[in-house]
Amino acid sequence: MAKVLLALFLLLGCATGGTGPGSPPPDPPDPQGGSGVPSAGERARSAVEGMMIGAIIGGQAGPVGAAVGATTLLIYSAITGEVPFQGPTGGGGSGGGSEAAREQELEEELERHASLESAIQEELERQEELLKELEREEAERTGESRPDAPVREEDLAERADPRSAPRAPKPRDLPPAIFEEERVTVPKGTWDNPKRIRAVKKSLDADRDGKPEEVRWFDDQSGQLLHLEQDRDFDGRMDAWGWYADGSLVERRLDEQGDGKADVWERYASERMTEREIDRDGDGVRDAFYRYEGNALVEERHDHDGDGRIDRTLGYEDRKLVRATEDRDQDGRTDTWTTYREASGKEAVARIEKDTKGDGKADTFESFEQRKGKTMLVKREEDVNADGKVDVTSIYEDGKLVRRQIADPALVPL
Image (cartoon, rainbow, N blue to C red):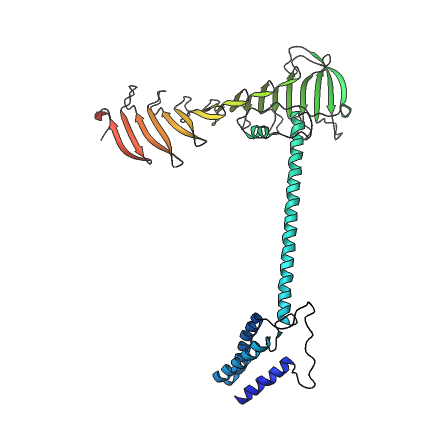
């Protein structure tokens, strides 16, 4: 035990450097302006660390030695504020270095945040420039008065609404000097024209491959645009054809599938689309039809099975779905009629009528209500004997049958 205590004191002397003759002078004051005297908090931390080191060293002599070593170094560290073999906890030792490292890490973290914020700001500015560029392109495409004219919020909302009648696209405003011009005679029937037409043909072959990307025909007398052909994907083959009357687009055909054949047919009036027909599967038969009135979609019809017969029709009022009819069994005859109403700003089913007997007349009537955000069946009425009168009425709550009324029990097996 004595040997352990002697070792401790000798180690303390080495750690502190001593203050006797021949010992080096004490550390100079803190160059940052500190007093060099450890604070109460630093003394407490040093005491704990010293106690732990003393226990480890003294533990070589058993439990009693560990206790003596822990007590000795605890007292020493609490008085001096230093932990033997580690240096002072203040600004001149490793403790100070640790604090400086933490401050350095904090500064680096702040710099990283500043760099990140700068990058985010740059990305926002880039997105804003991109949006402006898109608006300029849209303005040029739709013929706005200035390429940099701002797009109104209501216009953007209208363009984003698929039930809004699209505006008639207008040719890009390009300088005449880039076109090759020649006078031609367009034979009768070329564009379904009833007679031959003398026109000025203007061709644009930007890549000089001998295949123009755009050709415009103008009336030789009035100078008004008559016909427009475009190669939109630059594959050397025209894929958009437009017909004009009095300088305004009245019909356009598009090849969206790249097979050289039109699969979209559009008609326009007063600079708005009035009809759009599509051959979705490319079989040469139109299977989707859209009709517009004013600036809104009013009807769409679909042939989902490709048999050339319409099997679903949707009707709209004020751009809201109000009704639908369907031929669910694909027999060429409507057998389902659905009515919609607005609930909480959304379209919801209000009533469904069904022809379950295939005689062309509705015999089942289902009523729905919105409850807890869900469409719930509340009543079903059935004309069992097809006499035009309801024979069975079923009442539902939370989607479950709670009551049934039967006009003639003989009609329904119990």
